[in-house]
Image (cartoon, rainbow, N blue to C red; front, side, top):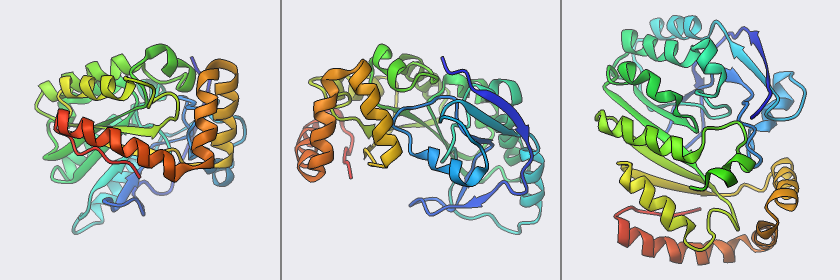
Length: 276
């Protein structure tokens, strides 16, 4: 488990414009993330946030975030484009159980703009707590990020996050409530996500949980992320290190081979599985 220091802070803005394809705004109620995922690229926010320390060991809760969001929404005459929670943090990381900033923000949308187009992306099963609010929103979907179906391996790579089995149960619960649920296999980790039979086991589990769409993304080779991942593989997942290094040497060749497997799985499970 992660032992992140959680400190309150204050923000001036809540809705931020984003360049992520398909989205107009993003919301990040926290700075930092106690999930401490070894491959995460969001540690680059350290350069701009004024925080110091290892990624996964600090969290700042923007305690006035819901109030700022309400003021911003009240000033808008229209609200167009999709909004995503959690682009450089996880909106349902453990701190959310204490501060409730994501839930309060969703309540603001339910009261002020219930027709807003909202997506949530998380590695936490805490999101099921908010099913009552989610059902009040007219266009809301919940995405779960997964990289493996193996809880033990996930505990090494994502030490502060909920186990994949818990995420699948949460996905099934939300889908059973009539909510739109999707999954994001990101990143596809060489030697881990693509080990023999692993992708199919994961896709099969997502299908059984009622997940409507599955998206994939390749590993972004940010230097800090690659360094952490290499150290983790060397120390805890030695069989994966060779595959990681092969990917880094020839990403195009790796993705071509992976795409062939995804094409077969797409046909079998009825998903449109692609990776960039």
